[in-house]
Amino acid sequence: LLEDRNKYLIEKIEMALQNTLNLMEENAPAEIYVKEIDEALHLIGKINGRVDTEEVLGRIFSSFCVGK
Image (cartoon, rainbow, N blue to C red; front, side, top):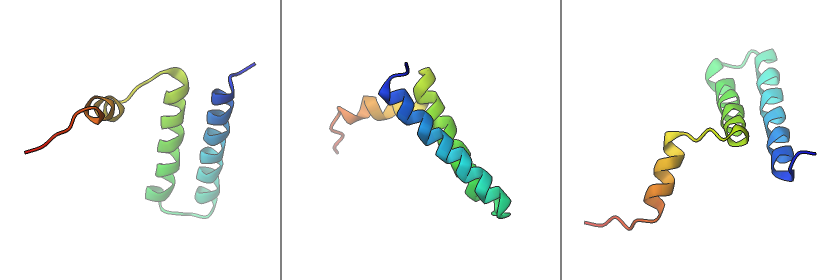
């Protein structure tokens, strides 16, 4: 059995990909449906453990108080 977290992420991936297909069928501009594809890829990264640069930087700097 998959963990509940993975089931949730897979459902979100499926929704993003379905949204992509719907937008493509409606001849939406690529800029719109590419966001859905990007979201699906981001969620896949959460399942397979891929961590992107923005996430790492966010974690690092979230614990620092940056002032002048």
